[in-house]
Amino acid sequence: MLACFPHRLTIVTGHYGTGKTEFSVNLALALAKEGRPVALADLDIVNPYFRSRERRSLLEEAGVRLVATSQALADADVPALPAELHAVLEDRSVRGVLDVGGDPTGARVLARYRPRILGEDYQLLYVVNGNRPEVRTAESSARYLREIEAVAGLVCTGLVNNTHLCGETTPEEVRQGAALAEEVSRLTGVPVVCHVAEARFRDQLENLTLFPIEIRMKKPWE
Image (cartoon, rainbow, N blue to C red; front, side, top):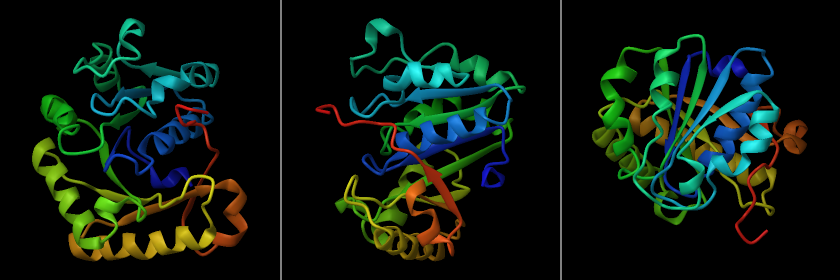
């Protein structure tokens, strides 16, 4: 399954609430199992919830280096970027996963590092979740993708279907999301890379290129 992510840098974007952080954390953990150095950069400076830095202990125990704002600012929603990000971009022995804030405003972070990113082996993934009201149609999702590209100054290279309803997710929800992702792909010319679903659904989704996950991110009230 990791063959879908052959590039040194994987940049994860999409509308807020699509599950970018859950996907990013699971991807970083999966890459770490291959034995190479892995870093996960939490670049979400827009949304104060569901940040990958909330799972620092889990990530570091698995050998994933977490790059985030300082601990003193860990619970603040501030436009501060970690200086360590430069090391991730420059050290080509490290596999990097960049978890970017979910909208064109969040994508401004990428514009700042665009010259450096363009010189690296990277993929820019756009996460699709058909249950998010603002992007539940192919047209609105495609429009959002293009807005992120325009702000970041980077071209999206792949789509990730992460359609879910949290604990109420069913295989049928994932299949419906797969259909939506294919339509977004038709409108944009961007290929679908994989479909994200909990590992317990693996046998029921054999016809999809599945990236199986475990739920790592908890809601603030859990």
